[in-house]
Length: 252
Ligand SMILES: NC(=O)c1ccc[n+]([C@@H]2O[C@H](COP(=O)([O-])OP(=O)(O)OC[C@H]3O[C@@H](n4cnc5c(N)ncnc54)[C@H](OP(=O)(O)O)[C@@H]3O)[C@@H](O)[C@H]2O)c1
Image (cartoon, rainbow, N blue to C red; front, side):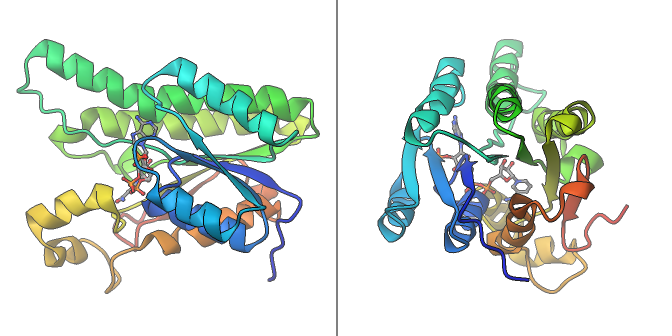
C-alpha cells in the first residue's frame, strides 16, 4: 500500500530522538507536514528540518510546565491553519524508589505525571476543540507495555501514567467519533532508544533479548509504520484500540 500524507499536518511530540524521531522521519518521507517538538536537545529535529525544510517546523516546549504546552499548540496553529493528527510521544521514565523521602517521591511522581499524562491531556483537549471545528482528526498516544503488564518498583508512576494515556484514548474514541475524531494507543515493549539504554547498560542486551520472542530487539523504526497507517485514515475503524508492539514479550 502506498501512503501519501501530503494533505496532513501532524504534531509529533518528542521528535528529537528515538521513537518520535523515527515516526517524524517516516511521516515526512510520506509527504506529511510535521510540527517537530523538542524539549532539551534539538540536533535530531534540526537535521529533519534541514532535510525537509518546506514540510516541517521546529517547536520547543517543556512539558513539565502547562503554559508551555498550551503555547506549543497555539504556536503550531500560527504555522499551519489546521492540524490533522496529534501524536503524544514525549515521555519521561524517571526512577522513583519508594525508599526515597516522601517529598522527593511526590516531586518525582508529579514530574512524571506532568510530562507523560497532563501534557497529553492538555494537547488532546486543545486538539479535540480544534478537530471539532475542522471536520475531525486523529490522536495517537505512545503508551507502553507497562500500562498493561505493570512495571518494576522503581517505575510505579511511569506505568500509572501510561495506563492513564490508554484510558484517555478509549474515552476520546467513545465520545468524539461522531465528530469525525478517532483515537489510538500504541504500547511498545522494550525498544532500543536513549530511554531504554539505561536498562541495556545495567542488565546487558542478552538479558533483554531473552525476554522477547523474536531474535532482535525492537527498534524505533519498527513502531513508525503503524503510526503512518493510522495517520492515513485507513485504520479509522480500529478507533479506541491499542496496538501492542513488544516482540512477543507480553502476549495477551
Ligand atoms: N524505549 C522504550 O523501551 C519504550 C517502551 C515503551 C514506551 N516508550 C515510550 O516511547 C516514548 C518515546 O520514548 P523513547 O524511547 O523514544 O525515548 P527518548 O529518545 O528518550 O525520547 C523521549 C522524548 O521525550 C521528550 N521529553 C522528555 N522530557 C520532556 C519534557 N520535560 N518536556 C517535553 N518533552 C520531554 C524528550 O525530549 P528532549 O530529548 O528534547 O528533552 C525526548 O524527545 C515515551 O513516551 C516512552 O515512554 C518507550
